[in-house]
Amino acid sequence: MGEAKRRKIAPCICGTGLPGEQCCWTPTGYHKKPAVIDLHDTGLQGSHDGCYMRRTNACDLKLSGEHLVSEGVLKVLADERVELSGTPWLKGQKKVLPFTALTSNCLCTRHNSRLSPIDVVGANFFSAIQKCGTTDRGRGMYFLLSGHDVERKSPRQIQRVLTQLERKGLAQTSAAILRQETADEQRLLVGRIRRKAQGN
View 1 (cartoon, rainbow, N blue to C red):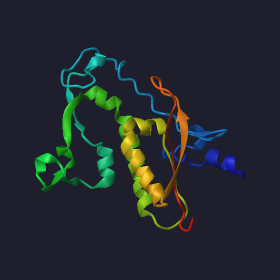
View 2: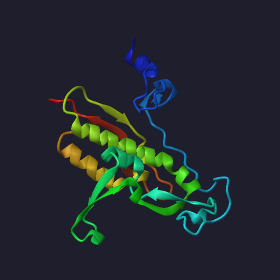
View 3: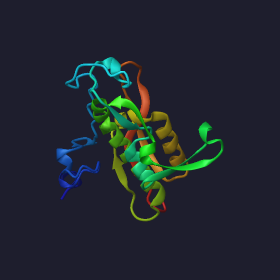
View 4: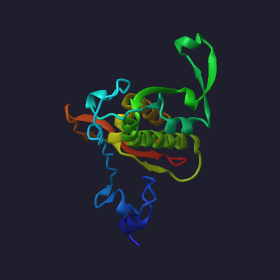
């Protein structure tokens, strides 16, 4: 069986479980399309004063507890609690807090739901980084993400993490030019991360 045919029928490397040809495999290779997120046409009309997307005039009536750091990312980093330090209000002390304490009512439930695909991308990204940094043996691992979605999540923080991993020889990334609607072409992260196999 040829490599291209094998990739068509094998589970897609993006993690959906679908065969590659039904997911991200294309005639030119793997490509993860960005999530389609519409914050204006939510099927609702109205503005909630507590939602920071209220100018879309498409809010729900209730606010949700939006995590200051995505819950999916927190679950990658810890089980149920995280230790905080370095914030002014802790005054040099450390404090262990549950995930539920790291929330703020700043989004209505509809907008929070519409943004959830980006939270999933963030969790998948940090999961890939964790595996790259903690797996010492075996073949190189591949993770497929939408570079556009990763950039929407937290570009500066994520690019710093990738740079550090590359300098330590733990991972390689590829980059491409993506055109933005309101800016010139920028060099952004493409969502393909490869952990170097041991000895490479």
